[in-house]
Image (cartoon, rainbow, N blue to C red):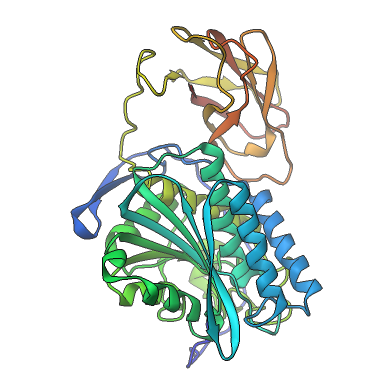
Length: 459
């Protein structure tokens, strides 16, 4: 995030750090709203309408480790005009190219040095109704910029890769942007917006910005520039039992600003920079009052150690929620599943609840597939909805009709979030489609409990 002209006066007081417990809740309300041009979208409080996948925080952190390595190898930063920035752009582009995005490095010049925006389009969707997601990729010269804004860059990168893994076919067109030279005043994003014709600008229904989403003393701030997008994110976090506040620290200081100035609806998330966490905020979110949300803001200590995993995990999942809701044409209620005879896609679902014993034996839920010909696809989609208070305890397998097991998820002591709400892709092309498929779930550790809410197979 760019440096503010005037800093707030601060009041210092300290409280002990408290952990914030995520509360698992079910959907209780549906909010319908209008985006510019009258396009409607809906969101269900606490639950993505189209089963947005869990974005693995370990994957997001792996991208941050790569950005840290790039900075370390290039003078300690990833700033405009430095080799570390171009290496960062090449890393992001390489991941997107391999995932099937159409990508371009948009070059521009600032202060005599060339820089680049990375623009990535996911094939398909109505380009007259585009949802765009962005984060800045550059750091300041003082440090590697892992929270500011490696966190946002890594979060949207892993969400883009989740789009690819899911084979998402959105109703609206989906575009991602990684901006250069934000730290000098949103130069890259201004260049991009200014390069668009008025007709192309009008095609962007919403721009979502993610500048700093892993602050070590985090807050949960939601951009309030557009009521519809503000509601979208507030509903998501209310479903986690996490209160939010309007984002004000970054007003006019990040890459949503050029889009907003061009008349495009903007939204986003922010975990805080150098403003000071109050006692009330610490009571609400945990952390330490009287200290900055990020004490390493614009400093050499903004390294891969300068990240709060819980905030990074929650906000990365919220990015996926927003994309699946907006770009995928989400609604308060999932569309009815097609019957087995529907051309172009078959969905078979088991919505019966199944208790998962705490630290107990594995349980299985069955789906009988019929009416198919030949083998299962190489991209069999396995949608899983498990309510659980510590998903790191869970091991999940898909069992083919002949008993072959496909491991979907391993247990992990570092995966401390709740619930598994995601879609896995399995290459089951060697197996006959028809027959009884099973989802096998085991809780391998004590104290946390849950149940299988539903699961489905999409051929």
